[in-house]
Length: 513
Image (cartoon, rainbow, N blue to C red):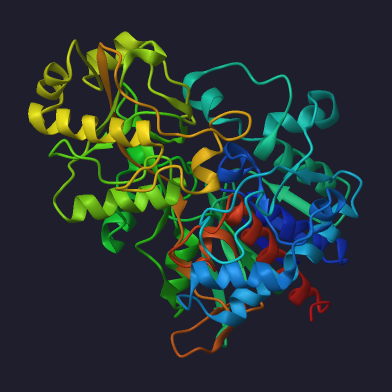
């Protein structure tokens, strides 16, 4: 093979996990080339809250956390079950705290607790305060010119809003990792360098083919290749082929997430799993036809095509997204579906975090995504449901509000349900009584697909017969998710990507267990 250049490790992607892998490899003394397909670093992590779900880590301990790994494992097992290999689950659980120790050993990286309830509040050993941490905020002065290479937030990217005064969440995580990598002589980070293919010799991955300035280059990776480039949520053909619900218009994944490292892995014999899955959420519909990941519902009810409720509206977003998909599969729900609420919010939908800010009401009305009626009967006519059915649904719901208990869907029955209801976590059972009445259109949204290359506990990619493809590792949404068909807690996607990228780097460096 004629190589254009050589290194020890090639990292594909530049989200939080990919940067952790690159940092770990560089600090182990390896020469690393990281390739990012787009013109900005950060991937979907740059849009996110930047949290990581990592039980029993040092940041939690500093805040007085008394969790145990036995309890965390019991919770995780109860939620994930046997959908993914136990050895892979254990690799995630058992390495999270050590991975964070590694990160915090760098002067640029520090984390703190951000209490966020586990997403299955009734599962054994669930914690109301969660197992969730976030990076400390970062000032523009600290990051300097590197901010120009960091993918901005969705409001900046989609609406042209000004850059925030301070980098928080995913912006802070990517910024801090870029600063740490800038200090590593062995790390070479490249933008606008899309991955094309793996190079395979004698059954092993020995390098990659990338695009650069209209030409192809072959990079030899002496120790291995880590694919941590997100999922395929931005690839409409792949979504259709693997039956992923929803549309591109409802995806909030980064624009470069086209799934090429997954497809190239399939082509060389890699096994895949969970290919019809994603990290789901209800998505508020905007006038441009996009639906964006929405959480923090503090009122209102969702109704199906019959004008009836079909879910706990305050449930954790992935669970709620799965309820939406199930109702659609049963024929009860058609998209868009509607959130019905009263005038106590001044006509604005009671949604705290729509990812992309809600704009002018008249634009939503003009697009047909915001409806109004002086009475519930008038509103029913506007959204195409039977008046008496909607009136009965609201009356039954209001009765639950008065009684303080939702007998149909147990809204408010778990800590997460009450998390957004202010100091002390009040009840999310908010009655719908004050006219005029309103309805906001919703669809299904996703943070990204979660199906990908199957790996073992060392993040090594596997063939269908269970054998390892030497030289190829995967993490994050390029890897079949360790959490299977569930979302155990906030920060699970970034946390698991960081852990398996760290494991992969240590294996390539020969320093892993």
